[in-house]
Picture 1 (cartoon, rainbow, N blue to C red):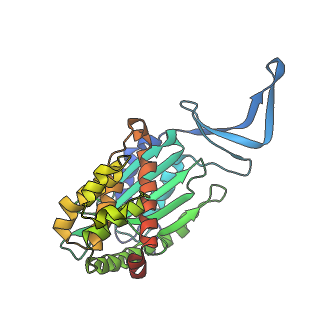
Picture 2: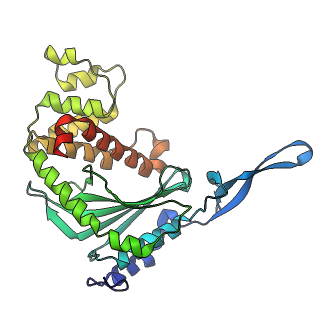
Length: 317
């Protein structure tokens, strides 16, 4: 592999990202010892801890031991761009979406690679996507994982078959760009494995009750199944819940109105309803909108857990 310019001329595409800047991640960081006030306006320092903060607004990003070496989000983005530039992936049409949450303590970047687009078996297509995450609050290491974007609905398809994180590094470690460039091509193998799983799900039929209980179980919503036995519809059950669950209501509505009609009564439609929710459904509390990137990431973990807990889908995976 040519680590400077590969066969697709990635330097041009990645340079376009560099020219666009860093978006919400365009801030610098600094580190100061953790301390607190004591008598006579004096301060006590905790020698084993430091505070990481933003230099533009003073916002606290995390507290860590002295062995922790923080890397600014801009540097993380530069690292991922460099990995893409040196890889053998085709970056023609490459796009980048930068999001932060928790006032910058977490950074989530999505890279879409439309040159790697494949049939999904239902008449639609999906293109390769790479997700780069990092955090200062201990939530995420620097990690690049694999996903896909469905063409018709623009759902971010969460990958569930095995390990989807193809590159990880702690803040205390130096990042090996050349190593990352070499292994990132594994994303195509992960993508192909996932497509095979999707095709299996398309042949796995599911009735309305099974689909509804899958959604409820995924969201940890306690359902009185006796109500379903005496003829209540899932919509009736949702309406009669003691506490209205907006997430369950949204998933059931989009499943019955969109995906069941378009894809059939199968687990592929069930999965697409879940990824529609994780990608598109707005947060209930307006105050949480600034943390939507983190919320979406949490929802993706819900989907992975739901698949691993379902005997039919787990066997397929």
